[in-house]
Structures are given as C-alpha cells and as structure tokens.
Length: 155
Image (cartoon, rainbow, N blue to C red; front, side, top):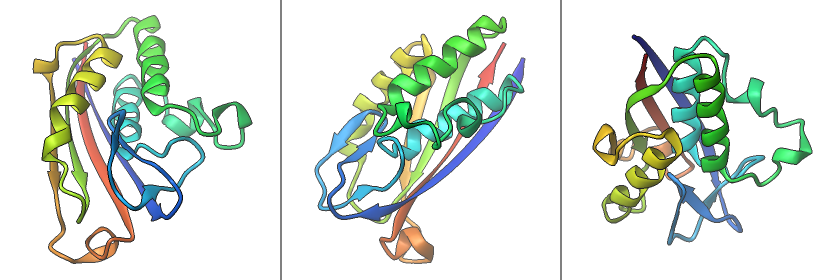
C-alpha cells in the first residue's frame, strides 16, 4: 500500500463559476485557473498521482496545453485514476479538506463525495470531504482564494 498527499490553491475571481468536487456552488466569485480550477479535485489528483510516483497534475495536464483550457477537473481526475490503474494500482480511499472562508459548503459535500468516488472507482463510503475556515486569517480567511489538502491510499 502507498499513501499520497496533494495540495492546491486558486485565487477567487469575479466572472468565474465556483466548482468544487465537480459541484457548482452558488457564490458571487469563482476560482481562477486554466481548467475549471476545482481545487478539491486538483488536490485529490495530486495525492493519487503522488502515491503512484507519477508526478503531479501539472505534469499530466500542463497549463500550457490549450486542450485543458476550462477542462472539467472531475474528468481530469478520472484520467489520472486510469493512468494509476494502468500502472497496476487502485485507489482505496480519499480524505480531503477544503479551506475557504465562504461560502458554507456543508450542503454540497455529499454530492462532492459521490462525484469523487465515481471518478476514483470506489464507494462514496471511501471518500471523506471536510470544509474549514481559517478564522479570517491568511489569503483564504481574507476571501482571496481557496485551498484544499488531500490524502489517499492506493494498493
């Protein structure tokens, strides 16, 4: 068995949709990035790739490649899981934390878990997503961006 850790951060910006775990969140700001900027899926993708010693999301899906412009990060996660499966590994579980001052994310978390589980070919019981604030501290606490950490176990 192998463990991987992933981390991602994106700036909040007007005129973008807020997508987390493949779920569109109602909010006045969205995350800025080359793809849909889903920090949760990006952190999970990095954790899975890291566990398999396959680099990171930028190596597999570079932001210099226009074919990934505005890409659906759940689809990128599916492709990363397939690459890990092709190397002989399978994802066992995922645990992730979203760091955001606003909006409240609890109403969306079950659907995020379902989307992530489906992308990873595991049960929703094997995916845990949490959300926390930084009590007004740092870039996320000031509402400038969002971050996510993720760990996964593969075998």
